[in-house]
Structures are given as C-alpha cells and as structure tokens.
Image 1 (cartoon, helix red, strand yellow):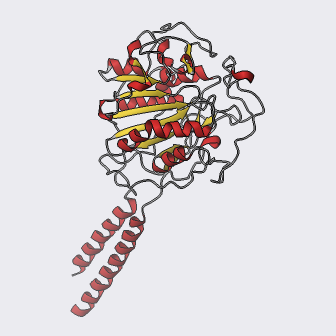
Image 2 (tube, helix red, strand yellow):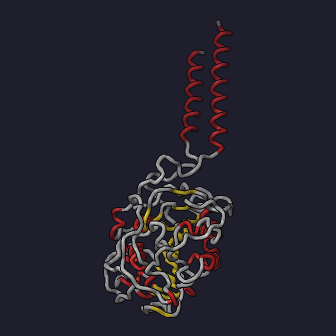
Image 3 (tube, helix red, strand yellow):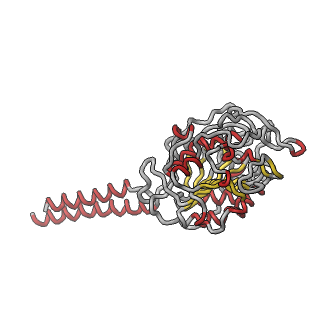
Length: 389
C-alpha cells in the first residue's frame, strides 16, 4: 500500500508539473522558429510616429488591426529622409542613396528581397498606386513618386514585377508569395491626413486582411520614418492567421529586422544588414493553432497615449521629405535619427522582465484542480494505510 501511495503522489506531481509549465496558447514555435505564410503583403505608409497613429483616435482601422494582430511597440526607421528607408527595408542597406533624388533605374545589382525570392523559386511583385503603367520607371506622375518604390534601383529585379495597384488580384490565392503595396503621396499620409490613409488601408486591404485570418497569410503594415519628433519610432502592425491576436513585443526592431523576418519565412538568403539582424519573435501562433475569434475594436494605446483621441505632437522642425509650403516636396540628405535618445540596439528588449503575452485562465483552473487531486490522493493513501494497521 505504501508503494501505491508513493506512485499516486508521483503521478499527480507529474501532472501538476506539466500544467505549471504548459504554455498559455499551446506549444509555441521553438526559439527562432517562424511561421511560413502562404502569402505575405507588406504595406508601407509615410512620415508618422507610432503615437500619431495607434491610439490617436485618427486611425480606427489601424487600431482594429493592432487589436486583432500584433504590435511592435519599439519599431524604428533607419534614417531620414524617406528613400533610404525604403531601400533599407528592401535590401538591408541604403545603397549609397542619402536623399530623395531620382536615381538611375537599375543602378545596383546587389542582393535584395525580390532577387532572393526569385533565386529561391518563389514569386514576388509590387503593387504601386499611381504607377503610370506596369514596369514604368518614371520618377513622378501626378501623386506617384518612384522614391517610395525601391525595387526600381535593382537590375536583378524584373521591372515587369512592378505592377499598378489596379492589378492587385481580387482572388487573393493568386497573390505572389511576397508582395509590397505602396499607396500614392496622398493615401500614404505623406500629403494627406491620417484619417485619409486609414480609410484607404481599410478599403484597399481590409478584405485581404480578413481573408488572411483563415488562409495562413500575413499582412504587415509599417512606415518608412516618423515625423522627426519621436526618435524615428514608427507604427508596425502584423495581422493574419500566423499572428497571436492581441500580442505585443517591446523588443527594439528596425527595418532590417523586418527584412530578416520576411527572408526567414521564405527560406532565402539574407541581404545586407539583415544578415546580422534577428527576426521578429514573440508574436506568433503555435503551428496548426486555429484562427482566433474576431478581434475587439477597443482603442489601442501607445507610449504617451491614454487611448483617447489626442492631437499629434506639434512639429518643431520640417522633415526634408514632408510637403513644403505650396505643396512642393523638399529634397534632403540622409541623417542619423534626430533627438537626444538613441533607440535601443536591435533585438534588445526595451522592457525587460515583462511577458509579451498573457497566460490562459484555463491554466490557473487546471493547476488548482491538480493541487486538490494531489492533496486528496495523499489523504486517501494515509487513511487506507491506517486501516490496515
């Protein structure tokens, strides 16, 4: 009987130990493991800080995506002005481009996301609002600006993979493996309001986002740079079936980390600084985990935001890539991130010790039940042993 009592205690102790160490959302991906989405769409907006978008009251659809997806709360651009940031996101470096000038198309044959995907046998395309025609290398046309389309810098990216926004398929299963969507100067929030860009995002990619939730696909929404008033901290939101709804990470990430994530998901080589960057972690669903329920549309808060509508911080200096008086676009040179605070090193937690996701209430209930069973087993064993004496 003593052996049976010991066995009962051992079994119950093992159950309790397993429950205490079980993750809240099933078995998560192993460290460094990333999902492999069927389709990834990356949309890039312009010149706003995280506080100007998430929780500002001006971008309800951005907030909806953040609530139902994941937020990178310490996401940073690389430099100023716009054009070098797009090149950094696409190729892991600025390719010697320091301003917004119109460079010679195809001047570089360096590695980049598209060339890596093509070499791997995967498909790639960009969808560019306002592009005069598929493959056009025009510098400007109306509200279209090539400076926001870095693929034209590379001779190893076929120009016909640069498509107009009208060519974005309505049958999302026909999308390339990875694609970028770039709004024009108004809808990107470069020349027009935050609410204009937010409405455009919902109208243009809202249906894809909904589809992505149930078709192992991913939407990434980010910005090139901030408004030069927030140490280049930008909003970055990820949404889709692979993403753990409502998750956040305070790890410091830049465009190079996002590029590394896209590369690792696709199994490609690594371009430029992405080779030394870490992929985004801490926000992914466990492999095979079912899609979560529809997201809450509760306001999203960011550092410095209470969750209620707030006015964007007043600008004290005019960014070189923001509209100049009269509507002209000023050119400028690439400069380090302004301000007295330097963003944390890439991949370093900005809030050490804080969990990135919450524990499931079920774990607490099961743990309590296991403790009760363990106690009951011990008492029952002692009672039986006394009755034998």
